[in-house]
Amino acid sequence: MTSSFPATRWSIIAAATAGDGGKSAQVALAELCRLYWFPLYAFARWKGLSAEDAEDATQSFFHHLLESEMMAAANPALGRMRTFLLKAFSDKLIDLKRAEGRLKRGGGVQFISLDLSEAELRYETAPTMDFEASWATALLEAAVRKLETDYTDSNRHEIFSALLPYLGTSTGEPPDQAQLATQLGMSHAALRQSLARFRERFRTTLRTTIADTLREPTESAIDEELRVLSSVLMAGS
Figure 1 (tube, rainbow, N blue to C red):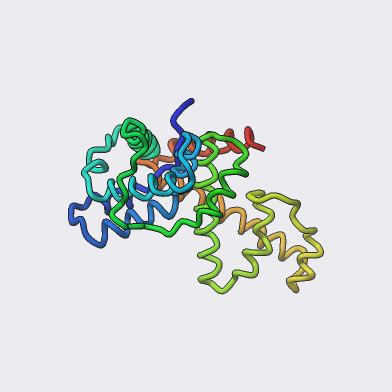
Figure 2: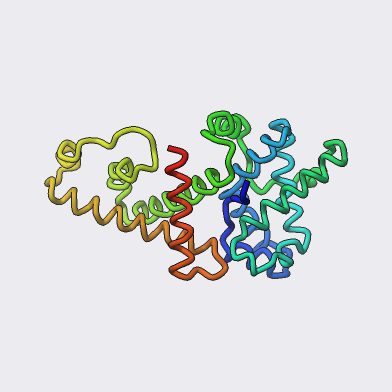
């Protein structure tokens, strides 16, 4: 299986390795954990850890990254942080196994509060135990959140919610456009224009999200990531 793990924004990594070891680093790692905790958690569960131990392993892993110089030693030639993170977390779980499963707790530190019932539901309903699928899902979710924030900040959350089903990022059929236009109090032509802009903004946001995961976010590198993303999503559909 190829390494396929949700990539981390290089900006977060840079902040986490700034050397101050203080609040900025903690905020950076908290954001990292918030964005990509589930694939780490699911990976631990796939490796046989209980739900509680998988949560502890995930939290203590990020805590260890904050306290150590692991991120500063990450090889920039890798280009993508997901390779580094997957290997680092895999090594941690191997160490735990050698220690007969005894977890080094994160000293009571939690970067995020994980809802184990939600985590287990996502784990049990995951369509495949595949890291690339987790990576693709993480990227899409991050892009959708960014787009939602943009629309909310401009007082257009109603439009966002109405047009979101047309992106194809969720299950179910989108509503009839003519009926939706009537519901929103606009013409069908105006709705089509809004939908075209919405889709274009999502494509731009997705490319920006992908660019944040690359050491050198060239157009060709982003295009390659998009091709992988599309391939993974098609395989899982």
